[in-house]
Image (cartoon, rainbow, N blue to C red; front, side, top):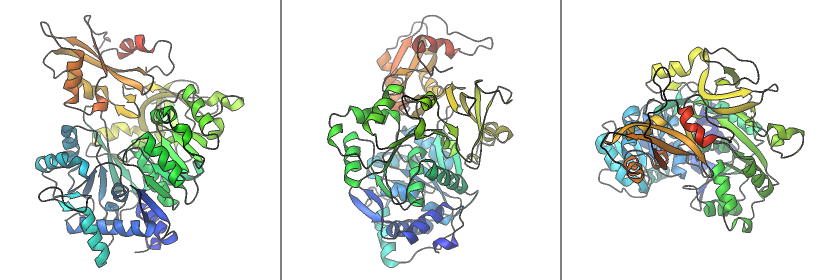
Length: 531
């Protein structure tokens, strides 16, 4: 097939069009090795051939567990070429949490890099759906595994590719697992059309240009980084991929490859600006910077604007369920003085394809400058949650996605965030659902009751804090409870501090813990207090 034979609402069309229009231009650089768009398209087709030989059919899942890499980038496309679904697994999860994700989506194939051999062996034993483990290395690392790279090279050499049956339109392209308020992760079903819509919107929104160099440094199991896979492909860009975030490596990559665009969370910006060698790097190639996933303080914004005067700066608001962008604050409002400076606390206007309203508890639209839940509608909104029809119906009630976030629209339609309707914590750009942590803590033999809240943190925005009531005649220490959590859940979800409470928890008339009362001592005098 060539690019003209693909439907325009297929992510596969982006890949084949890039290979047709810019065959010899660099597509990906990873660990100083580069590959062109034609090579990338052929590698994706070869990987799809491997999947097909291993029995992957239309609608089956192909999971990936590993650091950022060229293979992870390719995996956004290769399953879709035969109508299969890509599932990136958060490598920060505990093995128990990984098993839950794998058991839920039942992939036939798990692609793994050499950093996660131990986890892969456990998953293969525990999850009956897995038919094969593919290692991204030239050789197999465990008994019974297959070398992804070796087979891809064999297919490339032979030219014996499988027939293409790409997914398109409303077909699910990717499952992203996001933390759940019920204590288990939910698989967000995102379609080809969701991604095409988001890509077509964000390119003009951020004024991205053809053949720019984009650095991908955030984890590709998050869509904040994953969305750059599609925009760089659509523009014939050059994706410079780093395995994980490291300040020195990032600064070196920007300088070495002339990176034009970077999307980072506030914590990353702060660490970059604090690096002792920051001023020694030539970063003048940067033309567009974006921030999201967590609030950005005025002090940090000032530092960013002063450090990168030639780059346009944008803030975005969104979530996985929105593929991922809902609103954006344009660079012209990122000024510290003048008439536009009054919008600095905003996350901007809804983007072109998004309808957004603020509603009360009964889903009735409220007037401007009134706080309520943010509801959104548009072709970028997820299809639903994997195998969770009731949760999907609740989230998409009335055709509107219920974000669970609180905010208001001012008279000019700018969105201002006021916190979360529910209790999700955002720590360093990672979402932490308190119930997941509370479930672990309350399984400790000494814990009678607990509540987990977000408290202010100068670096991470919020830190996870546990308030614990112990059982009579029982003892526990702060360090001991934190270690107990680390054995069960991902490190970023674990409390960084614990308060032992002697008084009963404050309760509502229906005996629900009043977390607003627990938060007050920590958030007094601060903006964006969670309500």
